[in-house]
Length: 40
Image 1 (cartoon, rainbow, N blue to C red):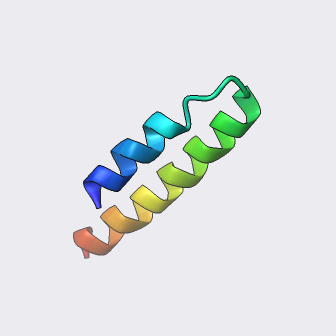
Image 2: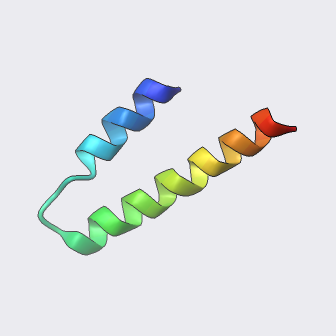
């Protein structure tokens, strides 16, 4: 899963700041959910 996130963060690096921001927020949300699962 880690690799996927790294790739996604790299791909989110686009000229459109809003799009980048949205992608980043979505990834962060996914990642925090994933970490929550492991924390339990």
